[in-house]
Image (cartoon, rainbow, N blue to C red; front, top):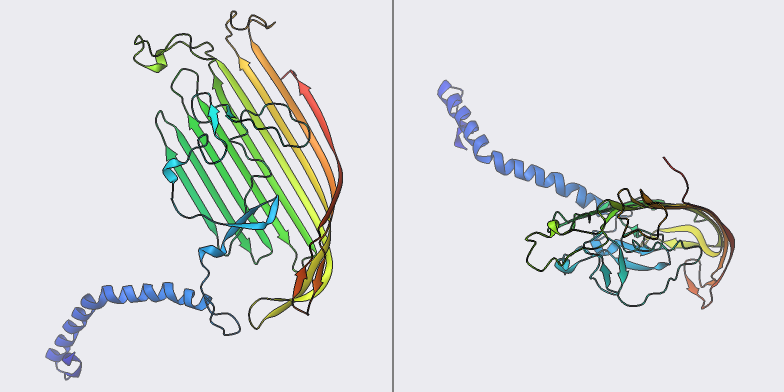
Length: 378
């Protein structure tokens, strides 16, 4: 750096300019690295300091949890590991093991006995329950920052499994998230393709004073699965070097299932006012819910259709229509429910309380079903 002390002669200026050029090229990359490092670390450091000048630890993944509608007080940590990822399968998994008709996405049923625990009307088409979303399987996330999860698994014969999740919250008032699943598999034999798609979206709004709560859920399930009725010959006798060449019983049959389910739940809380502690120096006056009245609206439509445009007369001997075999069923459900919840709590101070070992719940409602069977359609 001795060139900075040179005189005003042309030689000194030349040395100075050369030195500047060398300094720029020599320290350009370290300077850019330091600049981007400061660019990334300064916001993080600023966000880790609370408003009352108390140093707070940076939120970690263990602060992000999820729960289901049946157990809102039981929180689960988000699993961000890949442990046992290679053992994951829709059919062969932890708990009850299922058996399908040949490839992932086709009709499946549990190997052990499993009675139906749902309340209300059931059309009996439960072969795709393993793949579809329902109101009790939705994950509601409580996250500090936006959370996204993508998963894709590829298998033989163009078998694909894609899953995606996203969740976010706005100032602890609005919580929302989406979940999507797609299963595609061609199968080993003719007319065995499965195409299953599922989607759900939820949004939860909590008022600042905790009096009002509104929650909306939207579920869409769509299954398009070809049916071949089984093989006509033994595929392992050596005559067929490819399973695609083995003749099947049904060549142009398809089973379609679609479900649209919408839930809207609103509730109003009544309770005592107390000071909720946000940190070691900040308290916010809010309500401690003790009694809650809620209303639940449910609109659901399910459509089932089986169609074989080229039936085999010997296979469908007991059916009336020999040119086309079809079966259609659709039902529309509308439900309204009013619920009352009581959870006694006792204030021990202006900012603390204790729970009492007593919870009371009562509800009254009705469901209306409109069912159509083998109706005409375009």
